[in-house]
Image 1 (cartoon, rainbow, N blue to C red):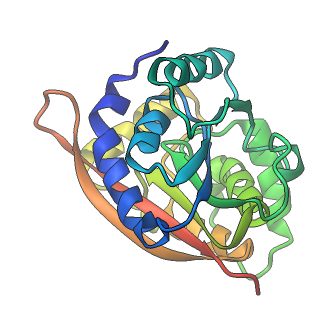
Image 2: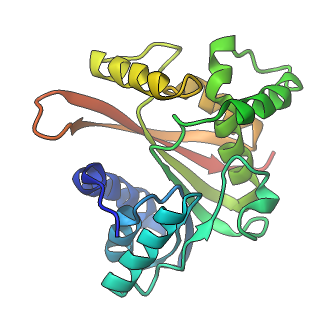
Amino acid sequence: MLLSPQAERNWESVCSVLEDVLESQSHRQLFALELGSGTGQHIIRFAQKMPFVIWQPSDIKEDSLESIKAYIAATQAKTVLPPVHLDASDPWEKWAGLSHNSCDVIISINLLQYSSFKTAQVGLVAYKSTEELEISPQYFIYLSFSQGVFSGAGQILKQNGLLITYGVYAVNGIITPSCNEKLDEELRKMNPDWGLPDIDVLRQLAYGNGMRMERIVSHVSRLGGDSTSQQHAFYTCNVSFF
């Protein structure tokens, strides 16, 4: 069973926004897919707070899948399904057998800042055919993985379903405050193809896949015992087929 101190610190703030967003639908059972569930700490907490949701965890790492299974067993979670192997950069048809229009909610936490160069090339090719979008070259380093998330969500979500992403973002290519600039630098040192995604690029990705940006919620997250605060945002998309 893996333990992430960051997940333990931020689950309450993440969960509170999810509860607020999904409260209006709490009278019925929802089906939610989490992309990149990691240790499993988040999804177990979500299940405890929102029992009206059936949760489907997923990840690409075997140790993460085993950790999620351990958390499910330890908490005896009734509304969390066994985790599935899912690579969000794959075409939606390979998303663990999930069918078209089968999800009410898709959640992605701290995932969009990671992307491989190989996947980026796929995204670049896909975007060249979309003439209405004007995206500067620096965005292509992470566009592909985001493209996989948004294009998959556009197919898997039901009408009026929600894609909810959580993370640190740039706005019009600008990253603030300085601690977020440092985070972006650290990500790029780990892998030159990684970096903070731009909200405006994601907005266009959403539009290109039949979705619209509905809500952004910001909050300040403390980094351990350090007094430095870090800005995060929820980026919520509401599916509308047009």
